[in-house]
Image 1 (cartoon, protein in one colour):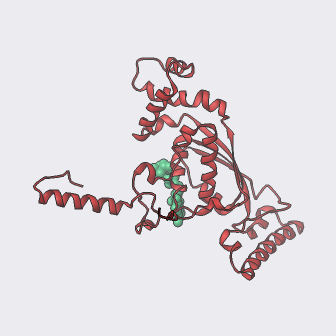
Image 2 (cartoon, protein in one colour):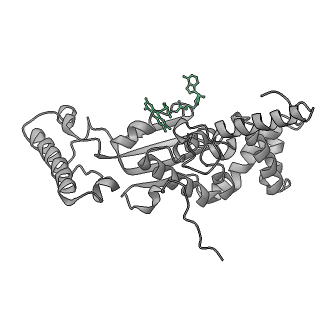
Image 3 (cartoon, rainbow, N blue to C red):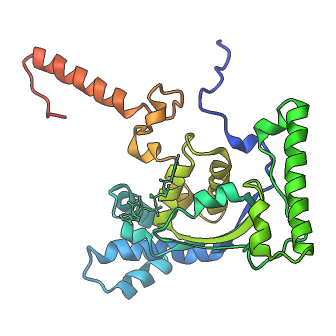
Length: 280
Ligand SMILES: Cc1cc2nc3c(=O)[nH]c(=O)nc-3n(C[C@H](O)[C@H](O)[C@H](O)COP(=O)(O)OP(=O)(O)OC[C@H]3O[C@@H](n4cnc5c(N)ncnc54)[C@H](O)[C@@H]3O)c2cc1C
């Protein structure tokens, strides 16, 4: 028997406690179970049925259409990319203790998602806090101590400026990217799958990757079926399209260059054997 090979997948940020949380505020498990599948099913089925949507919904919520039948249709529709059907349901998360580095990345998502974030203008922080990245926690003590001293100095200076009458909206200019913040985020399922595809990818920055691991965990807790669609983008694609993974150091899926090269090889071999394969 051979010893288990260590995984080559880039290390997950989940191994560290980062002091951040993602809490699903809505829906509850009961609401998700009772309404979410039927809502998506109704959206999908309406396209192909003479029944009126309210009748389809009634049949789905009362169990006249079995939930595995609903799931089967929903899975096929999602895999075919008919995304509007999954815009009818939303998930609302309380996101706390993340850094401004993360929030700047998160709010770049525009379609199908809404954010409200703790304001550094309107709130005069009594105790702003910050995150120490794992690489700095593990760094030589003098570097780590200098980082902590710099953060503490900046945030102490922030407090001094407030005390001297400088408005919070100006005093905050000394706050570091490591400063923690809170947000509320509501996303429809289509947006959530898209965002997860990008942010669960091992090429994503570790803190936002960790956030989406927490988000996936929360969605799973109310609906394992819907949670299963939150995956790195290479999983539904079947290949990796990240330029920085041409060397396939992340092995979750083969890089598209290699998939295309394998196809070209197959086509050449088929040609030699007198057969023609469809062109690339
Ligand atoms: C690993 C990684 C590295 C990154 N590095 C950088 C960086 O160095 N610098 C930087 O500035 N950003 C960077 N980004 C952010 C990135 O460029 C996007 O802004 C961010 O991921 C939001 O995704 P999105 O554009 O798909 O927007 P979303 O709002 O999530 O949009 C979802 C989808 O809707 C469609 N859509 C949305 N808005 C429009 C529109 N106006 N017109 C047409 N279609 C639209 C698109 O198909 C889009 O993919 C990075 C992101 C990742 C994941």
